[in-house]
Structure formats: structure tokens, C-alpha cells
Image (cartoon, rainbow, N blue to C red; front, side, top):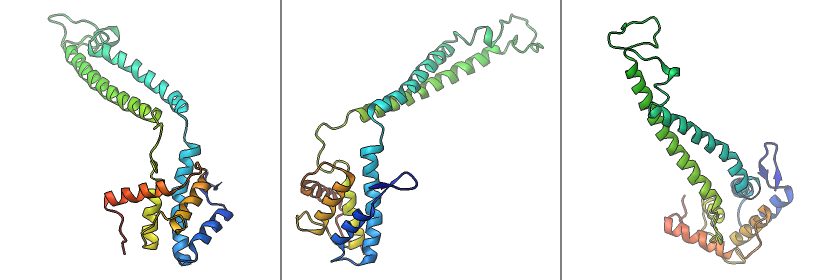
Length: 221
């Protein structure tokens, strides 16, 4: 595949011709044209997954300053929540019984306690929200880090998506037979996106099985 003008991926002429040759003896040119557009999109996303996604280390370097900032903010919010900052000079001055109810200096106001309580409540709510956000980010980082050591066949749903489009465009249920058209398409696309060379049968069988379980292995008019 080659980069397009927008930084995405597209089939080069040789790849497009090879895929067309596999299909042309059975399907008409309009079907093939539509299918190859959809197939390019599937391969485009797999190519991004394989080559353009950041590594775990890159993601960690990006996320770490965000998590540090959340932690620091939570520390300050905790102080506000405990009124350790809210009662300090930055937020006002003490008042006394009989104090002027409408002082010119609004910081010296008998209703200051109500404002302090509002600060405390909002600080607590903000801290809770940030802690939830932090937990979500950390969970996503952990999932990104823990890639399957031995991924199952078609774990990326690469072939599954091809089955979907094959059914949609050609109105035919694909098979895993080595001399079949779909087998050859899967074999060629795996080569195009640079996936490890192996017999595609397992991936095709896994994709077909998943479609059967989902009730989607049917021809729609």
C-alpha cells in the first residue's frame, strides 16, 4: 500500500490489479469496484494499526504529565475540601459578632462561611470527577500495555470485516477453501498490509464462526 495525499493508505496499481484478477472471472466490474473501495478501507485501518499507532512507551510518555497534573490538582482540591486553604488569607478575613453586615471590603463579610462551604462542596465534586477521569485513563493505559501474548486467529476482526463486505457486495457466503476466491483475497490482503505470512484458513474459519454466532452469516438482498 502507498500513502495517499491525505496521509492515509491506498492500494498501489499492482495491488489493485492483483485483487481485480482474483475477482474478475466471477463478478462484474461494478461489484469489484465497490468491493475494492470497501476492502481498501479495511486494509487502511489494519495498516494504521500495524504501522502508525504509537507504541506503549509513546502513549505512556504522553499520558504521564496529564496524570501528574491531575494528582497535583487533586492535592489542592483536597486542601480546599478540608477548608485548609478556603479559610486562609487568599479567600478572606475573619469577622466578629456584630460586624458590619455590608462592609465595603467584601472579604470582611459575616456571610463568608456560606461561600467557604460552597467552595468546599465544589472542590469535593471536582476532586471526585478528576479521580474518575484518572481511573479511566489508567485503565486505558493498562489495556494498551497488556497486548495478548498469543492472539487468537483474526483477533483484530480483519477477516471478519472482509466477510461482511463480501456478503454485502457479492451476495455469496465466502468459504475457507484454499482454491476459493475469498481465500485468495484474504491471502493477498495479508501480504499487502504486511501481516505475518501464514495459512489464512484459521482466520477465515474464526471469522465465519463469529458471524454464525452473531447471526450475521446470511445474504441480504
